[in-house]
Length: 153
Image 1 (cartoon, helix red, strand yellow):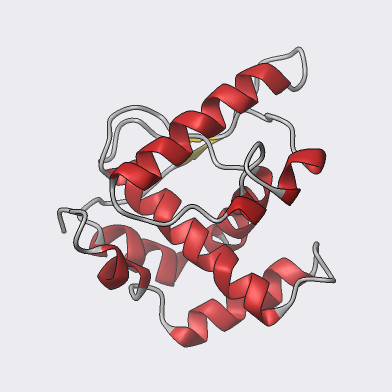
Image 2: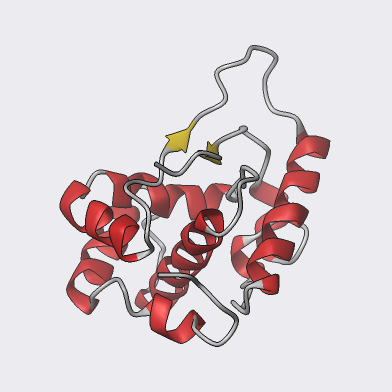
């Protein structure tokens, strides 16, 4: 699938309601106060991020909240692989930054701005609660350096 600005709603539906419910349940293990409504929004931000990552060769970095959903989705490999393939790629790789030196907050802000700009450019809505610098998530976010793979094979 080639993603265009008129298809975000279609892409958001690539994760079934059953898998959405499982992901929300899984994320609650680390985020016990997560409501169903916030969980639905989190899955939507995950979808927007992953779909956008398939539309560029530049690595994109998720916020920590989006990354939490991504980690849980990766553990459900069958729907994750089906989702990746529905977007026209074999697999969207999660590439952690293993370099030493710890978090880079300034680099993180820059990476988040690039990711949210790319998400918006494809016509998805960016939810400020899930992206630092845009809303409530800012106070608890740092840049851990995870990205998607710039090579989508």
